[in-house]
Length: 319
Image (cartoon, rainbow, N blue to C red; front, side, top):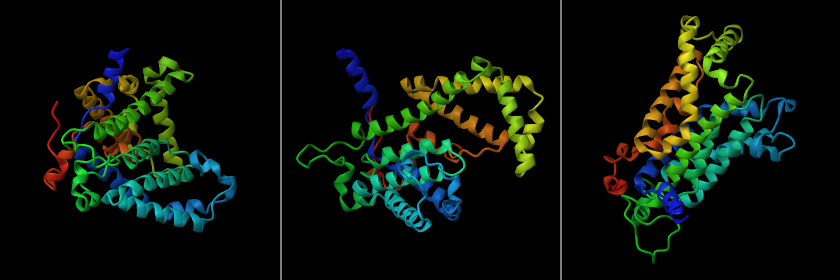
């Protein structure tokens, strides 16, 4: 039993530099700021839709009727302000949880109208993890005002010994959790395919080929047209069989890749390419995935900012 506990401890509470978690905060926060900012007017239009279309999900299920548009506008504005503070790492102890909670509410409220966008789920969960962990102990306004922040994790009394930002479990476990959330999402997608009417026959590629056909027809009739690549590939049954089997493998093996760092990175690259394949064939934009940010926690992203503030990012942790 003790061996199991020690193994779990080594697995979840691995060391990581403060800079890695900080860069993830900036990347995720920057993406959200752009994502919400560019959809500001659209979100307000949706909030003013016919109330009969409102079907609350998630945190919005607390409502029995839509919010007044003015109230939603104020809430959306507060989300963007908290978002900016989150990116800058200003008073993260308060701005982090505030931003994460507000973002969750905004995304749930948006999904309460006409369609649920499941691709937002991991983004919301990543923001929640970063919002309630010491993700601003480096590369932040907090760290500039309180230089010791890069060495002293948030919430740790000054009387305790300061830790090396090159490797501390307080920065490692949030990253491990972000990766866990990511692989679990893909695993559940694979399980959902197998739980459907086709079961393992989904790997034959026929279902995927049918999805491409239906999606393309809908886009031709109601949208801006199907992807040209869909027409070119539709008759290649072997290719769809390969893609169907490949997608199942990527999804079902996802949790296992956490056991090996190199394997997890190879999996992340494979999943990233899978999303770009979906985009080119079906023109479906999973923006967080296409940007690669969902997979960023699998990599040593602190290298991106090492040249900006090397003293705050810290060296790579010892293996």
